[in-house]
Amino acid sequence: MISLPEINAPGGRGAERPRPGVVAGDHNLVKSEDFGRLASYWRDLQAASDAAIPLRRQFNPADIVRLLPHIYLLERKSADNIQVRISGTALDELSGFSVTGHNYLKVCPREDRQMYANLTHHVLSVPCGAILVRDVTFLNERTYGLTSHGYPLADDNGIPRYTVGLMLPNRIMSASEMNNGAVLSSRFRTLKFMDLGFGVPEGLSGKEQSGEAKPAGSDTD
Image (cartoon, rainbow, N blue to C red; front, side):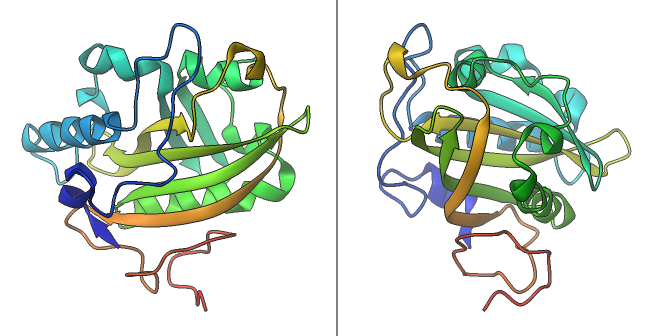
């Protein structure tokens, strides 16, 4: 478990190694330091809200224009339906197609669906943030390391239903490494939950996870 201030602190435990890089082309201005900028933006939204966590309607993409190529916004409509509301252009370039408007659990590999459904459950049920470092293998059999930081957002009733996040490759990628096709598989290298003031999933406090993300309250040993 790590708290949000540690994410913002230079060299703190929130600093991932290897340091995330950027995607080649027009989206090479976003760097690993911008994880802290997203965290600060989330805190600003929280401070301006009467709810415990920021509301989805407070989130304005125009506020973080420079980060948008690497931003994602997910809506959990049900346990098996996680709609992609925003997928940044740099994220789409990795595969070569856009997943905006799709159920993410239908476009990721079948064997990975429960893993991502469980991770979304963790973030929204507490609620908490999450740092995920993973190796993603694409249709062309290339594997790239990706790091993402995600934060919860609530609907107008104050119910956590959305996740907004920033995802970056772990190294600088060239134009020839884009358009890799659909994702074949994902392997979690590190999963850390961020305490946003409400704790972290029961049974997972202070632990780093690798492999499948398990339901809240399950035994992780």
